[in-house]
Image 1 (cartoon, rainbow, N blue to C red):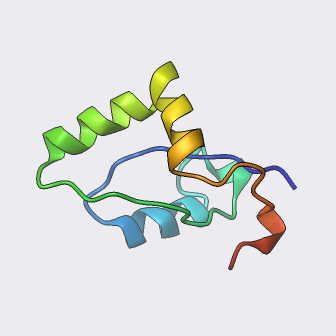
Image 2: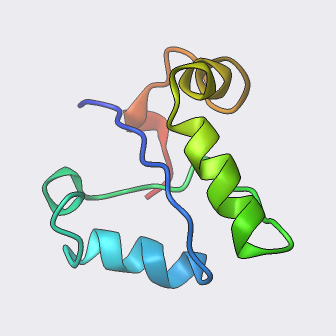
Image 3: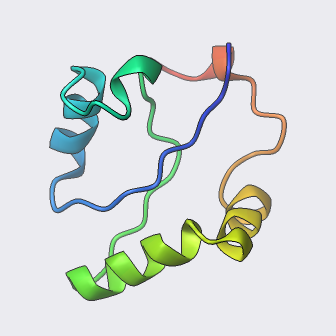
Length: 80
């Protein structure tokens, strides 16, 4: 099993995760099922998009792998 990470922003996290797992997003459908590992809430959309953009940058990916997700994560141990 491969462990992939998705970074995105939404106003309704539960609905967005359900949409990804239902195959409603062409980009993520082939990698379903998705499990939520981490999330962060922001006071406004601008701040959320700014942080999303950072996490998608080279330095942001390095930060996320060191601070936000477990290294050597075993996907079989995730709750489904």
